[in-house]
Image (cartoon, rainbow, N blue to C red; front, side, top):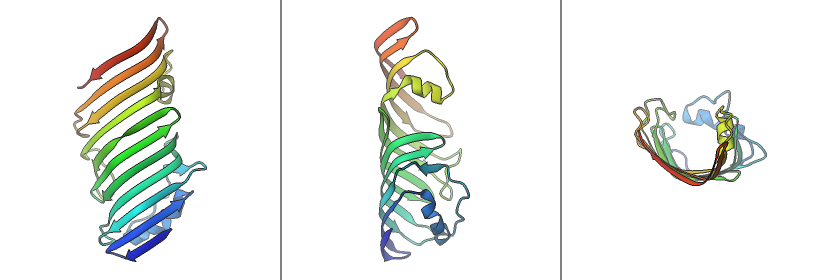
Length: 192
């Protein structure tokens, strides 16, 4: 880790690690307790952050670019995640986001309200995300469904509120096979 600047004012930060536990000793600096369990880990990967920490330690604002490879989160594996972000204790703004997992590529942006660095069920949310190349069979299995469907899924999802979601989805399926049908391309717009 390399840090330069004035603590409590502006710090330029370059951090790189192969273990998220490396950051746990920093929690007391911000008046917080380190979590005892982490939902994310790196499986042979690396996490890197380049950015700025501005303002007092009791209420810092973090801006920069995070780049993570081989991330495991809630029993799901991601090959690569990169985002440019602005975060403070009340808002997380992912200005850009790109995620790769096998042949699937996700990109977009999101903004979520926080309460002391954590989202709540009533947190405001807005997001626009596009997905392409998602393996339909893998998505079904990961979410507990056993259906004889194969193919690739692409979608654009827009969400404007979390507590009372307003959303729209545009879905494309390519080279999809159902037991009685072979679909070359299908398009289905959806909204509540």
